[in-house]
Image 1 (tube, protein in one colour):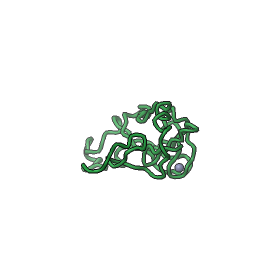
Image 2 (spheres, helix red, strand yellow):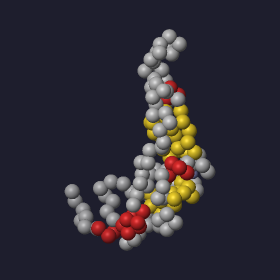
Image 3 (tube, protein in one colour):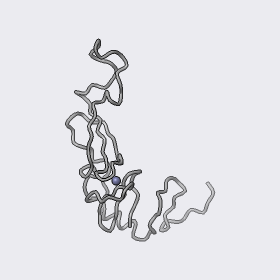
Image 4 (cartoon, helix red, strand yellow):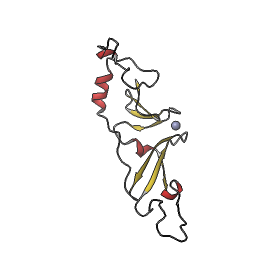
Length: 136
Ligand SMILES: [Zn+2]
């Protein structure tokens, strides 16, 4: 069964692998940080937050200081879909921002039907816990 994790990422619970939601490429073990399996593209922050005042004339220009900040984008190695972008101190390893207990996730989804599209918000009630009778 595949579960939707983010706009760009899916976990196949049977194989315990991260997959790209855009192209279905198998990325790597869902028990590890998905960013390990992606293409990283670090940016000088001024590429994204342009200087407001002339960098030829001023040391500080309202653009973030590249000695203190790197903006890193993560792409699917197969299709190039961007999965995440984060602000890091230069040299900092990728943040492990999504870490599931895969065994617990399997147990949670064991009695559920697979979804065919992502669902969000209070109207999503899982079949196993369907106590919602409508009304608010
Ligand atoms: Zn992809």
